[in-house]
Image (cartoon, rainbow, N blue to C red; front, side, top):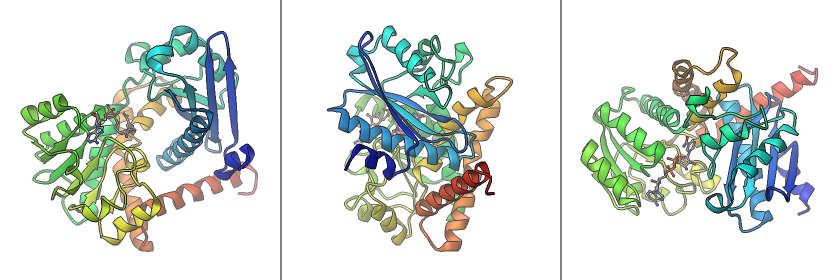
Length: 357
Ligand code: NAD
């Protein structure tokens, strides 16, 4: 496949390669779609095996940002940047300033934010060379760490899943199996425990596990058993690709709702969940809390206000309820209907923009 074919395959608007020998910056910046507004998405720094792997990642991640943003009703499109290099060894101020200059070169078509290998403090540095930056520290008027809003969104989303299954929209008395007690999973565990849920938890980091067991009274489960533990809700909050031909038949729950990106290894695994009657909250819908929170840093004329942003994060439950209702009416899996809804909205907005609406 030629480079142009790869870019055109999922409809990217532009892919820019940046090279700055002085700072040793090598970055690929993909703008997937700007029909709804400037492309917003994180900058990931990773020791990629090569350019091919980095390109594949940036194309996939930038497209996912469009879908997440459109589904959340935000006035932004999707984009992403990947910097080739090991953040622990190769990230310094000179490199960050060069990233800002590169982003500025796009004149506002892309707004950079933090991602794997980057921090809110790094965004403060990048802000010295571009105004098209978000996800800054709270002390610099930014929206800070996105993981708490992400967990709040997942928690509210779980309640709409329960309601969709005919239950009360509360986790009180429900059993939740959380895979991964990192930044999002640990917040989610605290929220669920505070409302009276019974928790099963798993993490490869024993200190995190120990903490949840002693602080929240959670039951510790081996990593390879967490997805098949009998419970109401399985919440993947660690890795992508965890719902696959091996794990889906072994699930022992009614609902899958978690923060991890790209939970389905393949679309057939989503169909298999639907076939088993398990309600799956599409990842990019339920995990949009961090992005929604972040978006208010750029889009609020009066500046970022946390209480307002969190109100909007909680609206994820309404978005999910609408999605589930439509999926039910179409007798189709919600993850397929979510894609359909996004593509319809994009086509409509594009027609309006082009004067055909
Ligand atoms: P994190 O790195 O802080 O936490 C991940 C946790 O999963 C770690 O504690 C790790 O030890 C654990 N883990 C890894 N492999 C595991 C395994 N096999 N079994 C059990 N636990 C395992 O990451 P995070 O920020 O909490 O994000 C969690 C997921 O949610 C990721 O997939 C991320 O892409 C996604 N996500 C995060 C945000 C956010 O705001 N942080 C937003 C959207 C999506």
